[in-house]
Length: 155
Image (cartoon, rainbow, N blue to C red; front, top):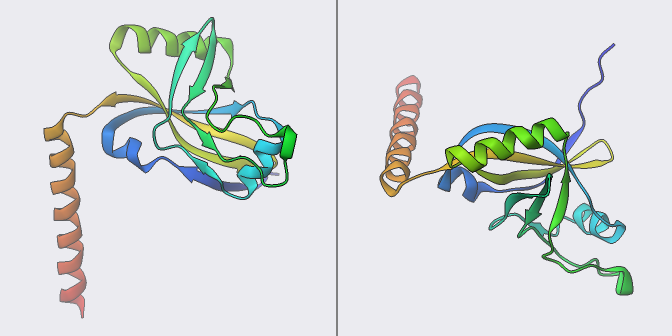
């Protein structure tokens, strides 16, 4: 018997899809404190300028802004602090090799609840040049125009 996957998306990093080619995606856990989870349940998070790096065999997420929980008083943590990501060691070593040699970046794509656990979708990304961004925008515009034309022809 299969269970339905219960995912509630908290935040997405739309800028990452504009700035990078996403080659591969990984699901990771994230180490948080109680008041941070309560703040996430209220949706007070920003992934816009976040990135990840690998130090001493661990992956750290930097630049994720989780606003302080209103009722958290002394238990609140710093809003923008490095947070450890939870992955298997062999996956971390694989990513370390790719990031170090082939010029990839690790970018958080989205943050969501998987049942009661907070998960982070991590993207293995390669940066886009300006002409790549323009080309992507032109393709989207052409697809939108084609869909509009087909819709008008049916009516």
